[in-house]
Amino acid sequence: MKLAIVLSSSNVETNWNAFRLANLAIGKGDTVSVFLIGEGVEYGKHTSAQFNITKQVQKFLEPGGKIVACGTCMAIRKQESSQECLAGGIEDLYNLIADSDKVITF
Image: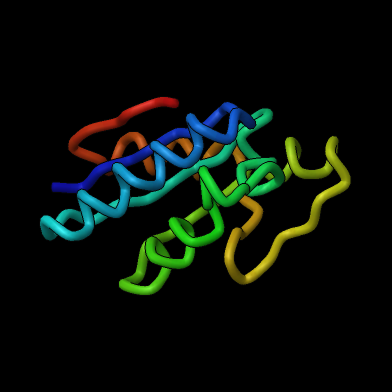
């Protein structure tokens, strides 16, 4: 199954759970992509010992998970594209949705 996760929250527990689900799906053999939009581009800003988003993201990226963030949303927050999180656009979001079997939003 191709799963798209759209993350629009900067809430640490929500983001942690989104990446936990992404990791579970990859472990079951699914193809998973994450698109960050709005506050979601700040997904790792509030990582903590209890909600270790950094660890979940690293686990997600190891087997080939893909994270793309809205470039406009990143620019508003003065963030730059990185190897871990590429800047994309609304067309990338559209293509991800059109190409996925399931879309989940957080």
